[in-house]
Length: 84
Image (tube, rainbow, N blue to C red; front, side, top):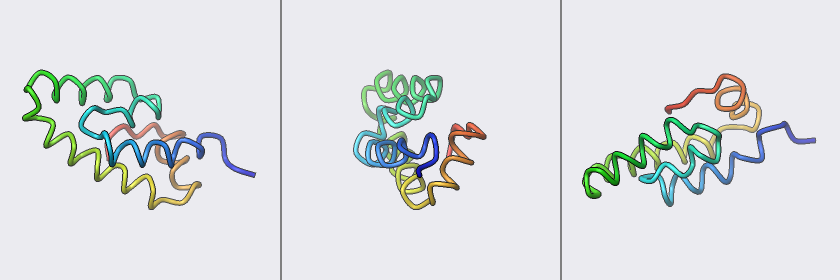
């Protein structure tokens, strides 16, 4: 039996790695404010800020995928930790 919210771990991790600069992984996890921040930084800097946002997305994607389901749910679903 899987934990509620654990199903978002793989989707969030893969999207963080592939599309992290746009904050798509944040929207999948329900972090609208953080997703909009990442998207706006990338768009409003004409992509220059996207390098930083992409690195953040890459790190977060790896963190999501390396956590156990229990750790992921406790950190990102229950505690609502928006960054790293």
